[in-house]
Image (cartoon, rainbow, N blue to C red):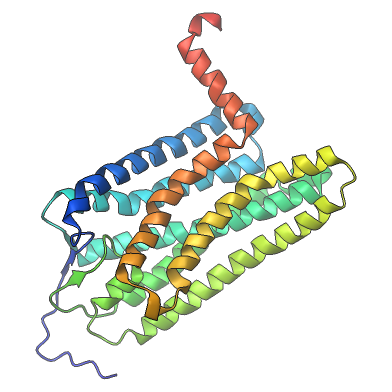
Length: 316
């Protein structure tokens, strides 16, 4: 395909379409997304605070959970405020620089979380399959190294992907049929050859998703085999309960991402892209603190004691 750039008007701002084709839904969507966002911020901050104030929760599993909550809060905050803004104001403009910054941080947090979930799967593998050496194996140094690795990899991938988009030319009318700078929506506004950017995105997406899923699946295959060999019913129940919350979070996160990127293009509409993006940038970050708090006795007990101390300080 030959891209003719002659007489094209290059743009430095974009207009976000969002859900403008459904004006009757603006008010309900605004209140729904605002409520979800508030629950997300409060829930994830609550998880971080609960883990910090309870000495019993100073373990590798909760150390990783703290970072998961931080990532959920961050990547929800990249898209949701702009989504709320374009639902209530007529001005839906975002600059090219602002768009690239938004894409960079969104990409960083999503890829980092993808590998954070894989690291947590490895942590559960060590806890179930080698419990006696768990604290020795998952040392502070190893935990810090794993955390640093996930953030560095997420940042590196985002730099490469953002640079590949930055090198493209964007022509008028500069309309992005989305509520944020999602990759395919930004690419559709380009008037230059996107082949290099598409190849880079395809390679990074397949490599990242494959590696994170491979680590996760390999960890849980060994976990399941180990659990099935346990003679004690109580031990089996306890081992499964330590993994159930994490499995739920992984299933939701990867399920939505696969829905977004693995549905054939012929059957995928921009409405589906918007809905799927909203699911993993607005809804999924809210679900993680609920999943981990509702299924975790230590977290629930810490919250109960904290609320009791605040409501009845005279009893302390």
